[in-house]
Length: 303
Image (tube, rainbow, N blue to C red):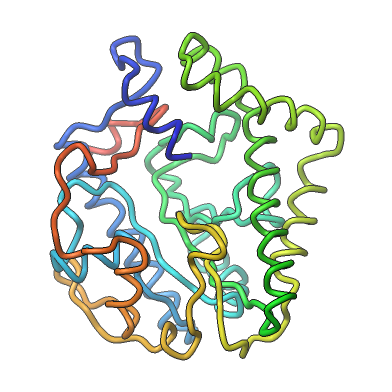
């Protein structure tokens, strides 16, 4: 959650509880993530799976022909049909190097955004306090089919946003001890955590697997893989502000990213304006997003 990341930035890293990435860390993280991206691209090209750079990674390709200089992550988009194919072939070919965590599939995984996770370099973010399979990662944002009928789309959207919120409540409970250890005295944190923790404790009467399967059943309710529109439900703007025309969004063009050719949507101008507004203007330093790590294996990172 962006709110917790913001709060964590104010927590001192001197006690080792949080790791604020240095400029040197970011450069090395970027290098390692490119290796993951290269394997994802190789797998997709071999099996005819469509993909595109997503969010800030797409913006980096457009504005910088590579990473946004201070960015320390990589994101890609796939349609639901393409991701369902990806999740069957990638572990078979690259399971020795990566874990592929996906909602409703991976035991103990409580996110709606799938991740390809490096087995080489251990890293944990704020919501990975209780997972052993942690490492540098690439996020995959799945573009879900959505109903054409406005009423059904409204119902579907409200349910999807509800699923996001309920899972975040469960996540608060699962990570409550570490959150309290780090942020228990922070008033801003208490305001965020209070209600969600209470709801999460009620929901936790049933196992996480139940809520994940129910959430994925609802997200995937529209089975029309040719639906006119799609939504990136786990995106930063959530369902209703991340609805895209399938034909425009899925048509890809080549772009340059750190010396390699990548795919971005041909409709990138509309996509970027929806996410960032005046996307070609570089934001001031205090508006630039950074990850805060709970753990980062710098020894492996720099090896």
